Image (cartoon, rainbow, N blue to C red; front, side, top):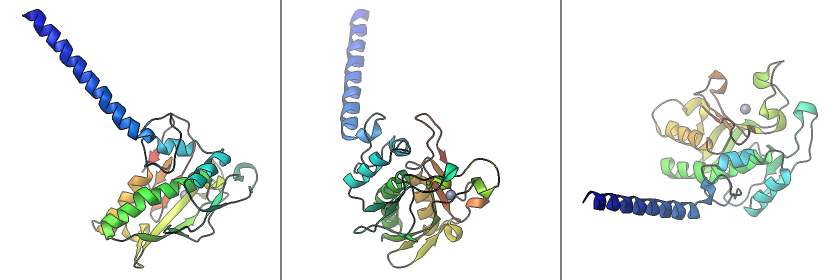
Length: 241
Ligand SMILES: [Zn+2]
C-alpha cells in the first residue's frame, strides 16, 4: 500500500512538471521578448529584458538604426559631433510619421537607443495610458532637450551626465488631441486623472530606460522626467524613481 502511494506520488509529480514545462514553452514560444538571449525586435511588445537590450545598443549605431528601419520608424541620422566627454556619435532626429507623437521642439536629436525607447514608450505605454485615462491620444510631447555638454546637475566637477552624449531626454509635458496640456510640474501631485496618467507613463518608462527620474526622486526633477540609456552591463542596476 505504502509502495503504491509512493509510485502514485511520483507519477503525479512527473505530470505536474510536464504540464509546467509545456506551459512555460507555450508562453515563451509566443513571448521571445521575455528571454534574455533573443534579439531585440521593436515590433514586439515590451518584454522582461527589453530595457536591458535597448541600453546594450549604446555604441552600436548601425544595429540600432537597422532596428528603427525595420520597425518603420521615420528618422534622420545626425552627424557625430562634440569632443571628449561630450562626443555624440549615434544621435537621430525622429521625423513625424503618420499618427506619431510630435516632439516639441522637433529639432531634438537623442541617441538612437533613447529614440528607440521613446517609440516603444509611445506605442505601448503613453498612447494606451492616454486612451485609458482621457479617451483620446497624446499629440505632442514637450521636452527640455537631449544633448547638453554638462556634468550631473550642472556642477563644475564630477561625472558627466548622460545628456553629454545625447543619451538622455527630459520630458516636461503631454499635449492631448483636444489641446489640453498635462505637465509634470503642475499635475504630478494629486489624485486626479492627470496625476494618474503621469504616474502610469513614468512607471511604464522604467521597463524601457536604464534611468528614470521623476518628481519622486528630488526637487531637481519636480518639472520633468529624466530618461536615459546609461549602459551598466547585463547585470547592472536600473534606476526607477
Ligand atoms: Zn535629464
